[in-house]
Length: 409
Image (tube, rainbow, N blue to C red; front, side, top):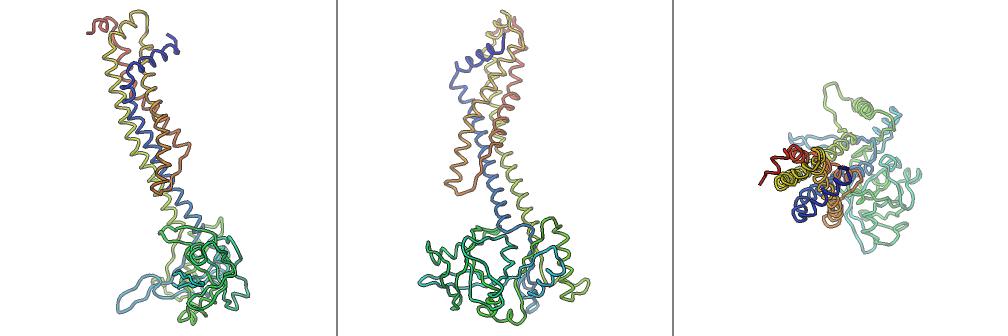
């Protein structure tokens, strides 16, 4: 019996019991759809982490002020202003492979015309945008004259610009920061949320000299103190080595003795982001593994139905063998039936899985990414399930004795 004829006989046998064949495929349909949908959800989560990595900037180290002790209780990081612009300048001078960007931070109330908005102000240097890999959608950055003269100029994040001016162009508009008028000279590109769920676009940048002298004042003005120093490590330079060098230079500048705790905190963002990315990959694999259980259950259903089919068609098998069919022909027929059920179910599952991925992204607001690799993986797995779970019933049918099969009632 040639292969084409075997396929025709197998398809005809499936067509005789359409309802049973459809119900048998249901497990494969659900399994393939679940695998595709779960991989899309996991891939979407991983893509979101990658976007956050790009949003924060690559190869970054954040230096934060240390803690102080009050009433015997040691307060958290940033409670004491222990780092300064001088630290940033020394680091940049002694470690040529890094770029430093000191920043002052403060909560402010912004007013523009009849609109007002509570936001976060950062006093920064021109290096801040380069360190954060943050471009402008309109306008310009701060120049040297504005930095030295503590000019009243500001750059707005997308959230602030929209909240204060709506669809109106924010450039050259005047806003008040704690009642001090500032002219908008630039608008930042959209960054979105960071790893901690904070809106990075809800920010206003001003020259660090302007923030210190015109807005914040206080201790910062006396000590040139800053809240954070952003350190960008040049491409190709070992970030762990740079982190160690930064710690050594700061300890030397702050005259800390061996064994004495640091009065500052270092956070290597690359390590944090790599951990987040690894977690997303594990989540994707876990979701795919859980969904694959449905495919295995569907395969068991195929095996069960094929065993029933062998029992029901025992006399038919005996008759075919009696007229010349070989054992391998019988094996091939039942194996084709099992694989056909899996592949048809897989095709329907692919359509449902793609639709489910789109629906989750649309209605649940989750980011999903449907990839060709996930579709091929699910379809291939479905075919393998058909062969694996269909082989035993097919082998059982092929090993029937023609005489005993013809006598079977």
